Length: 66
Image (cartoon, rainbow, N blue to C red):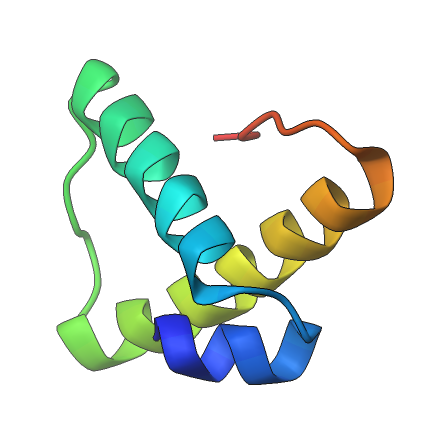
């Protein structure tokens, strides 16, 4: 996923790793669990991560809207 999003957004994989860590941390705080298939969730997460990465790159700061 990281490689895919990095190629779409022209950003560093390290930046995406940091965003993934923040998203995972927030999901744990909210005790979120999958409600759909892993494959469907994977595609949704790639789209979500791409949007979050673009928001981060254009705003200079990051907030995960979960």
